[in-house]
Image (cartoon, rainbow, N blue to C red; front, side, top):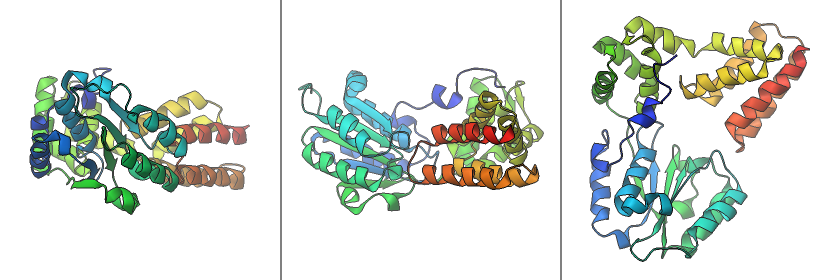
Length: 318
């Protein structure tokens, strides 16, 4: 386990545009927009995971709203609350004109993982963007910009975020290690960066996971990154089949949130584990996995669906 209960990703998340890692051109352009805030357009941030899109949106919002940040910013993860109801109820309610301070240029709505919203939800969102343009700005965040409908793209200024250079990742990890009084050599930090592939968030999580004993070595990094593989998923499958659903769920969440395994990879390894362990009721278990894979694909909350999947699989172990 880590040396602290506080996630380093949150502990060291930048609060100012000037403190962001990389993305110099994007930051420069955003600073220019701050000079005339009343004419700032809606924004669409695109790029791979862990490159600073959400952090940039939060920093920009703080610089615009200052002390009123908490009152006039609505941050939603669209992958957690996908669908037409989220758009109609939460976003529409927040974006209404009532309650807008005369000293505040506009309210800000940050929609993370907007590319996971359904087409109906995006269509409803487009109408709200049009109706509230005088007193509200949207910052949409997407990994895959092609999944954002054209009418929304045309109403936004698009900023594309690039993967963070390995040297910058290693340098940043080194500074965190120093702050946390953790010994870490360059080889181990480079191994973390290579595994994360430009994803700074995952790099920080891996550094924290590797620093449990106060030092980070290349061997320990390999052990940590290697942990997020099929053998751990097999353990989770065994726990589920044994009826230990809570333990299985906790380990599943750790794999995804701490070690950076994607929900897609988890399902892939789970599917393979069914064959490796020669699970009884093979057909039923595989059909169950396929059912929940589809639910996630069409927009259901991944954590809720994977938890339900483990619970349903437990029925086949009896």
